[in-house]
Amino acid sequence: MRINGTQFSVSKRQGGVLLSILFAIALWLVLSSPWPPLRPSDARSSRLRSAAEYHNAANFTLSTSAAPSHPDPQHWLARNSHDKYRVDQPSFTLKGMVNRVGRPKAAIISLVRDEELEGMLQSIRQLEAKWNGKYRYPWIFFSESGFGDEFKRRTQEATTSTCHYARIPQHHWEIPSFVSTQRFMNSLEYLSAIGVGKGHLVSYRHMCRWNSGLFYLHPILDDFDFYWRVEPDVHFFCDIDYDVFRFVRDNGIKYGFNMNILDDARSFPSLWSRTRKFIARHPELLHSEADFSWLLDPHANSEYNNCQFFSNFEVGDLRFFRGEKHRKYFEWLDQSGGFFYERYGDAPVHTLSLAMFAKREEMWWFGDIGYQHDINRHCPPAAYAHKCACEPTSLDENFYKLVPYESAQRKPVDSCIRMFLGEQWTKRRASNLTDRGIKQWNAKEEYGGYEMEMWDA
Ligand SMILES: Nc1nc2c(ncn2[C@@H]2O[C@H](COP(=O)(O)OP(=O)(O)O)[C@@H](O)[C@H]2O)c(=O)[nH]1
Ligand SMILES: [Mg+2]
Figure 1: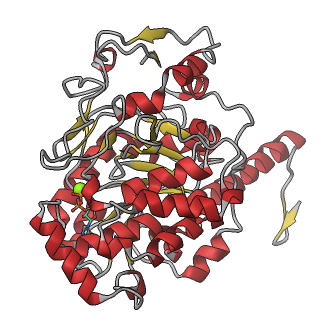
Figure 2: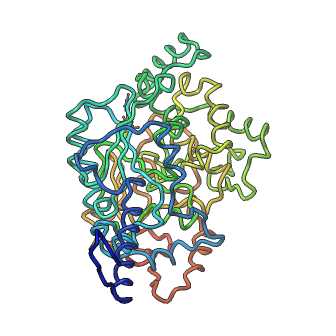
Figure 3: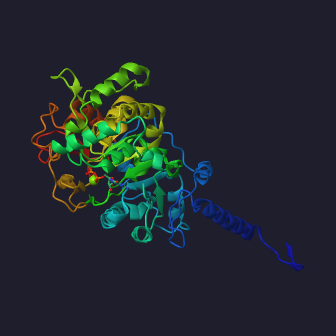
């Protein structure tokens, strides 16, 4: 080989080594490209990507998002726990490189106000310490009024992942023209007078509406497939030793929750009748395996029993919510004015949507994640004690806590989480436990007599 007149001789072996190095550098450059974001930018600054950038980035993906036809979540956990896919090693190590391949396009999202900074920081710190410090998914903060420099600086300092700050478009945070202001004012006064929590707050109505049907339309989420919703001031008690986003993607899960509860149903008196009308109008939209059995009361004319996924914690598939079915349902509810004349909540709206358009195996109870939101807390049983810093709670702990004494409302025949898990379903799941490495653990004692097979920690 001759370079600048100088003769270099390269043996076959040296050539091979040189080629391998060049190949490794090329691979490293591709895998450490900023998308999906794994690391903070050098300046630790954050920026809002334009919608166009996001669309362009959508063409670059290393992952296949096809879910297996017969997912087996327990089996997956047995094979992929112990932080198999952590990405906190340098990207030039073999493991660092391999684990960056095929990552789901996913982000942690928070709707939050600038003045909730301290609460947000504590949620970030806990989730980073228990999980995301190892997995480095980006954080995206949303607000209708933007964020100040201090919020941006301190949130970015609390994580090694990239932070993005997104402003909610005004038309997603205003009273639609078809809503009567007078009727809305009456509702604020009425719900406040009868003691429905935050019934008097205009901002709360916008929040519920945005979380129900608008968040997934924000262009910053265009290139993401999965999200984990995190609120300020929540707690995470347990070490999570697997990639939660890979877990939901690989197992075809559309929605993961932590608590399944009753809330004050006086805030959405017409939600079920409005939903029934939607079903009557669009029976073709229902999933062929839609299963309402855990949501209807057999003793009350199959009315909605008011159970709902407690949506301040949710890990979801954005493609489900962006899909035509959920969007049509949201628009149908929105046209009724129920987010303003009543206080339709995103929790029952998401729950009913999933019941209609997904099958039950596509919803997952993250019973292994210790979590607290205000007075509601879930802590896994004693078998998880070595991973958790909390007192185990009973299975039914959160069932009824949010229902005020004065709310005479429909209740399920059993607690919501038991209704959801159901005997048949747990049996069917248990029969999937084929891997000899998975020990079945009977949580009879800790879970108030409910027989449930869970994976061992
Ligand atoms: N940006 C913004 N976030 C809000 C507003 N109201 C509520 N949130 C956020 O929405 C989420 C739910 O609100 P929260 O008051 O905690 O409702 P609760 O959990 O039902 O009691 C939290 O993440 C809040 O920070 C608002 O007016 N603006
Ligand atoms: Mg909250």
